[in-house]
Image: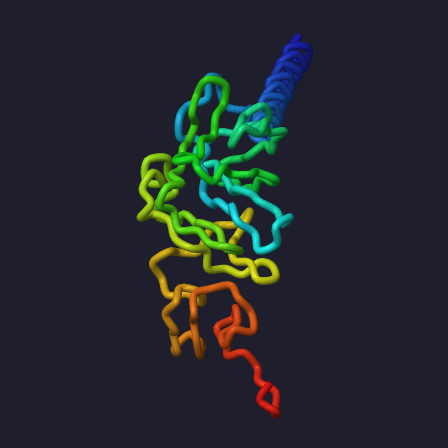
Length: 220
């Protein structure tokens, strides 16, 4: 009958509508699913070395490096190696920056290599790299790729204070090496710098915040 036909038609229409709803639900679920870890072998240059802290002020102070995921994939660094150390992570999403500690960088090494299996994913120069006690070598953000960080000219002494008598930016995007900043050895009065001796020594006449060391009324 017409009534039965209408009922079947309505039921079929509803079923199609429900099927569409399931399809949309699947699409939303897929969109929310975290990205899978990138393929193996790991491509060169997907994670790079962006900061190296080799010489703490205190002999037993931490030594570390910083790495950044500059690719569009997720990378699990578990099992990767750097400076002879086997890493236990972390997992880096695209754009993530992480500092790895402790990493003891050999004094006589010419290169620092980040290795995944048989692949040297990145290598940073050590010979001629600007580094000093309590101060890391920092890669300019404009050079954050595996080719540009091969040049020592892309690195500078860290400018951001992060601990007592220590300059560096572990786990964060590095300050520019080309823009004026406190710690670059050039006083910038427009930025409120009264002095800038470019070192990490306190009470030496110029503090880490580029202000003069306070002097007691008796001159001591």
